Image (cartoon, rainbow, N blue to C red; front, side, top):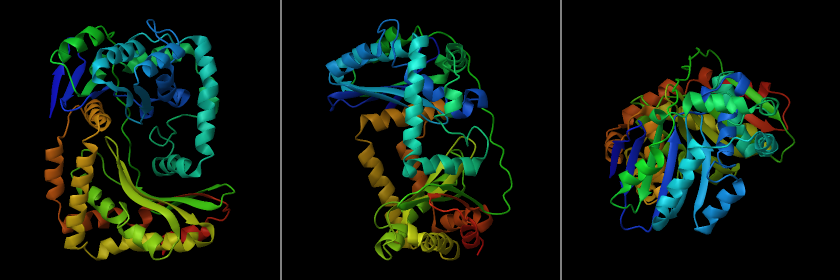
Length: 421
């Protein structure tokens, strides 16, 4: 399905040709995110992502870039993860060369004007405040801080206001020079592609300047001997809650078992948690569960928004469902359904050029390797009921639980008592 080549400057080119389509996603992935930052510049990866849209040598203003993109009916955006940063444009296939020109100019010759940096500080600060005013979104950031502590993995991707407002132009230049190397990037074209796609990539991306490439500090796992609880007091009409545990890295073979476990517990309206928490008790509108994978660690978490007066009951039900998998194997039918669900959802996602470009691009820049869909599904199919129970027994220990809540609660002892039962 995909082809991997390398340009003369070390940039990796990944192409996914889908000739039956009339659109194409041009995606540029960089192997750097917020976990590569120091405390002094926390948030700069995300800030830099914003700045690349603020003008380049060829397209000197944000208005010009957005007008040109809108003028061809294209969609562009970007996002910052803890381990990578991604920029993309989705356009009609006939505009592929123009999209390449836009992205290449943004990445290789961004102006990083001082007045634009100062102006964008206000935008970033308002984005941080918007997230913190949204409990269903902010609870995730607080949970990762609780899970990973005062480490780059535990820090907010967007940073802190007091740090953001102190960043200078030289900080952005130094950070770019430290990580935005062609060897640390991947260019992906997914969709209807011309036969000379490699030549086009050379034209627009072969002159990316050589830069450095640094590694992030590995996460050191600390032995946890009792559950952790953190309550962020906020007057809300709903308790937003994440209950999680330390999980597995992307390189751990157990990731396939935990993916199936999360599907059975919290994926879809027929999952165990959805049935027990919403359908049978009416405690929440929304609940799900899933793993998070990093290069050297990971987590498994359950998220839900619970009625304030039922928050303790809801937490007890969630814990009971997690513990049930420890003592009883999932059924054969549940495992079969979960495997088919993963296979079916992947088939749907494969129809999206954005999904394909993101999958291949981010996998390459974070791990320097790409697991094909067939390889992934083969490993999913190999998981047994015993494998899932073994994973549940390993991670669902009460001393490993971490509970993050946003709501009008001041006393954490009741939550601690529930976790310690």
